[in-house]
Length: 105
Image (cartoon, rainbow, N blue to C red; front, side):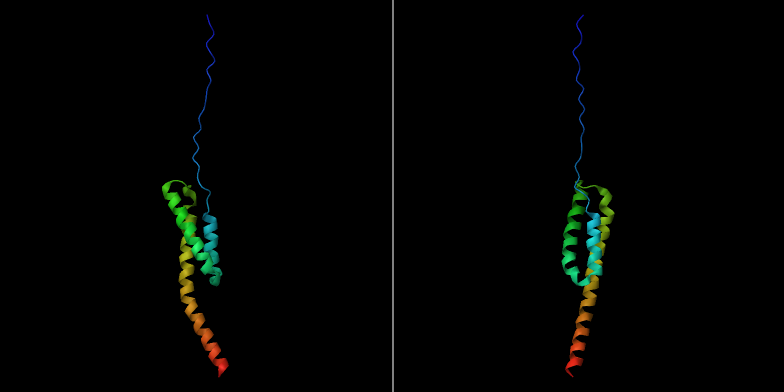
């Protein structure tokens, strides 16, 4: 009786590739936007683009959902920094004007 041919066992592993999480980076940039208020003009748009892109990738399933909360927190901090800048900038300009007027007199 003939020996049966060796059966080659192949295993296929399906790996889903997700983009790396950038939630911590978005959160850090959002914090910088609040703490370093003048630099928030630079950090704000960067955080906006990164957070919107990441949340879209998470919704489409191309990025791991574990970073969604941190990314949303960074987005909230970005908006908070913008509100703080809009409130403090007019006050800072007003103080600057009063200070320069008192020096002239």
